[in-house]
Image 1 (cartoon, rainbow, N blue to C red):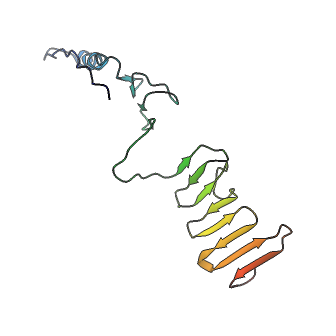
Image 2 (image 1 turned 90 degrees about the vertical axis):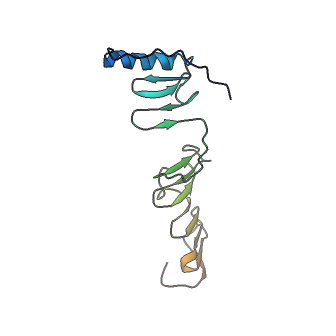
Image 3 (image 1 turned 180 degrees about the horizontal axis):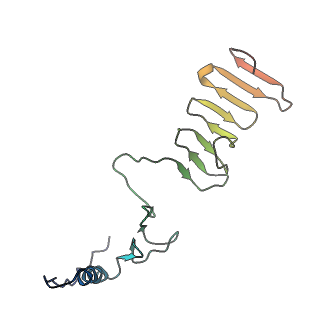
Length: 152
């Protein structure tokens, strides 16, 4: 990691206005050779370009970093890894998981519900809590392996 350059810091005086103090703070930050800046209410690294380089925290609370290390818990309402293509993976706020380029759990072909129901495309469902394995042969005929508890 590069060593930080020590800035030249001017000493504020009691006769400075609030605006002069704000300008002094900005000037001091700029003396770090552009390592950090405040731009339109956003805190950014000097080389920040969204989706490309640097890091940023915007005024709405959205953070963008290349990588992160968390030594504690990470909590999120939803998780989307890989975007929205065939290789992506998602978890919604209820704990349902799915794979592929589907925007919702309900529309996904390959998914695992928060109750343990596993759907592998349109042909196979594994319902662990009810001890059922259902295979669709493609013509709406179904084969049930396990105990039946009603019509399916």
